[in-house]
Length: 365
Image 1 (tube, helix red, strand yellow):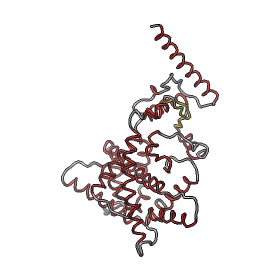
Image 2 (cartoon, helix red, strand yellow):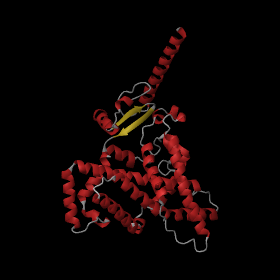
Image 3 (spheres, rainbow, N blue to C red):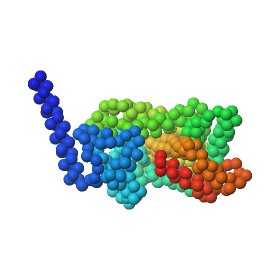
């Protein structure tokens, strides 16, 4: 009994001394003000089921730039437009080494991910590739017929549900359209039904896993145990996605070896293969490796699929809950579109109310 009591007392002393040491260290680091953290758990009890509202409530007391302790992790929260702009724009280069979720390390993906790499030659190259060959004005203009075709198919599926008086899973339909669009833009190929369904499930589940609070992020000492299995599950998803991407890469490389198979670069995969081949010819250090290709294509696909679908789903839910706003939007669209039944990209500039709804959805989301 005496030994047990001594162990308990020593454990409490260790916890308290560690807590005091953290408080002293934080004071010396001149961090912004914030709520006083508890030993071990920090300010986790101050964060409810809706973290954004909890942070907004805390910001009313401690200011737009505050420090919170989430378990063993010290975080600085910017909760106003001015502080967010200072962190993400003005001082972005100085603050680029932000903390990384443990789940991103699944399957070694973080080593080649454009989303989480620190500023480096590799990161700048990946960013340039994505911007110039997928999101540039010229590339977006080239993809206009493809977007029109996919959006038309989406509207037809919605109309079919309406004719049957069947419920519409807006998120799933928009996700499917995004998957089809991104896959076609990157690989210039169509998907069979089984692969299509698998990719939709991967995109949705990956977004859920990355958005799930992870005890490994709050207590890094426990990260090796992966107590919630998030890293393991995400590694399985990455492995399956890599397998599908590898199939496309292998097929394209075989086609390029055929007579006349090496034409102008038509999609992102062609661009990556051209750059990789040029590196080998010039004898440069390999940057566009097979692993990097897989990671970039996976990032663009997974990151671009679910985010848009979720935003559209949120917007539709808010419109259904606010019929007056929906009515105002419908009136604007009738006035601008006239007898047209489908919004074209050239019409968006004349629909300020629609743009405001999109921005408000992104803000509240």
